[in-house]
Length: 458
Image (cartoon, rainbow, N blue to C red; front, top):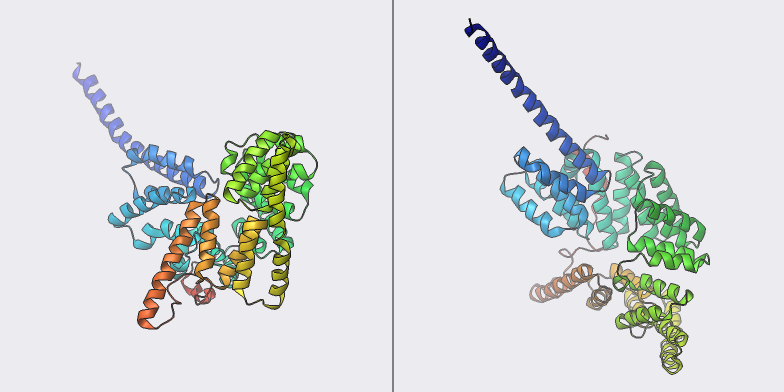
């Protein structure tokens, strides 16, 4: 009599076991899809690559380390600028047989943004097919690379192609704004960043760039509003805090500017323009000792720069150290005496527009004696006109070393080594080096010629 219930129980267990297998498979597939989709959104939409990495690393062991997720991790590390980890994952993906373009794409995009867009340009069609609706990642890396090269013609071509492929892409509007800013067309930049914000109201990068344009145009109230939005929404990078402080200081709110600058974790590592702002704010707020210490840091980088000498002298005067203050003011006067020579060189440039060496030498004098960040801007323009000039590259490397931007400095040191090697090679072959070094002199093939290999507009 007991056999019948036992048999029925075994049948139910077998039935549930059979039914449980597809349920587990369905749950596994749903989890796989959710982790991949949500990580994708964190990387490309929500700008939270660190959260994406944490999620992928947590779930990967349960999903047997899928290659697609490892590729997403490489993309997340690309967003974080961690080249070492990107290279390591790319090597692993290549060793496991992933197609070359897909496996190396995070590294290609990283190199492109750093100023080497040639390989991305050569593989543009396959890369856009790979990234599909995220093709802005590919095109954005090219725009950034060509801008770093000073190649405005190619930059404009990429932006034109971008707008043709993707309607109302906020990233395209953002990079159009960056391009206009570099071209110093501030009205066009303002319109582009405003459009980017309309298309994506939560994009902090577009709001930060728009705030910087407002500062440049001396629209301090609009800049203050934009920086305030950024701070209230959890964006408190040193660049945002110093920009916010600058707008407040120009509106006459020195105490509020000082409050924002107190949020900075380590002002000693700030770029010189931002550190000078902190110093000036502390002077306005009668915090002379802090200002004096910060002026000393600036002078350790640029010992003859007029504005930093003046900040130090004013700080010492407020501290009652009159004799030391007068010595610094006298040294500042010596730097001030360089201004007429710089003015003459500026006038000379108006008639010698194709003389990059003149622009370089004028930029060097400005960088050392009058305005380091303004002077390096002229040197960068000279570099775009003549990327093979060793002195120009040396000046740029020196500037970024003093400012603590060692990766950028190393890029210029690498450029110097390549130029020197090519000069040695040219002595052997009697052929001038032009084709192997990235720069504005590279031939620019028309990007629209690549359109037959591109995917249809999404």
